Length: 206
Image 1 (cartoon, rainbow, N blue to C red):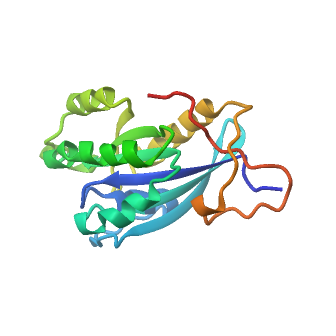
Image 2: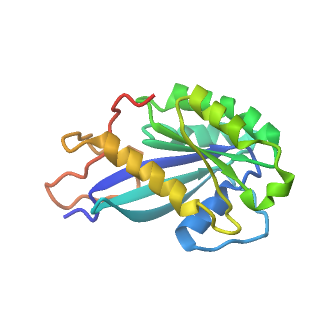
Image 3: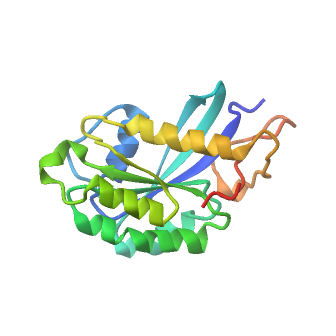
């Protein structure tokens, strides 16, 4: 029998140095490292959540924000169920360039994924350049849920962000919605039972 009720492919995108890798590490390991390390291409993480008594496994792909890796990172967008677009609240440019990432999502993801806007580095509130209202406007204009402001350093709202996304995916999925598992889309699940793993398919979220 499969070890989860739902399996979702989640892609973290955003500009360089917004804290995507730190967010993933905090969510997966409960840890934070002040040492800055650039993601080379794509990193992978996994965590299972309990959502309404269902085991929801998130397969999280942390992509590099560097332009020279863009062709590599965007190749992982196909069949993503959820997108976490991260900006840095202390860096206005990181939100201004976010629209380019959404263009890639719209071009490459196929059926519209659920998109969550996350503003990281809320522990540096005294250096804020992006107001919460500006982020709300951006999210509304692009059909996103959020924004949720997080701090990978203090752990503020990290779990909440992923739980919010997972809950939206489960709600959108519905009891009768199934999508055939494709081995090319995931390295995670080896199915040993005729009982299929339930994947999210588009429910018209915009």
